[in-house]
Figure 1 (cartoon, rainbow, N blue to C red):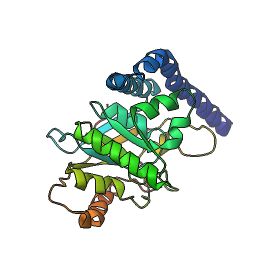
Figure 2: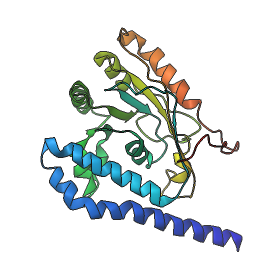
Figure 3: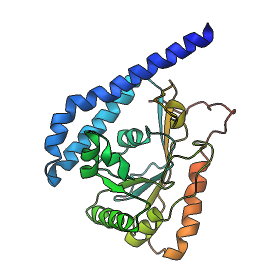
Length: 257
């Protein structure tokens, strides 16, 4: 009986979380569609996305911890380099990063019905298997950074087999771009998101805390492309240091909000 009750509780919470994710989208879809029609209105569309993320996470009712290592404002523009462990990662980034954030995601996101075209117009999509697509995405990112718009991306490129435990090898793009443009890198760790929404077949959501850690910005001015391997290693080490090994449990939060 306890196992059945646990299963029932999981299914009910999955339904609850899904409803409060989907309902705000449909409620705001007409406004999002209108705002997607002109480039100068896209910042307001992102504002809706950020409000959607804040509202959904609030309604999920889970403890949410935000850790900012630096007491100084993050230099702008910058590139936020995050690990990728769950489909909820994008919402957590939208919820916590202020301003008109740019996002680089895989091109399949733009094919999601209704939401996909809006994502494709507001942010950058890329087919990492295509040299042409990667080049186009980097050009778009450079242009946006030159206009003062910060960028967030997942250096792993996709969700790995052991999220929150092991990082997949980082791709070079984010680091090459940061050095070429001279903007700082901000390592971002999200070590618990996979426990809330694991990457498995079928939709599964569990009542579990969320946490995001923003590390100190790393300056890239004066670096060359020869410094990419060392820069990748430094960022990866900072992110992996926040992971919670399976079986160790979740440490006490420093502050939930």
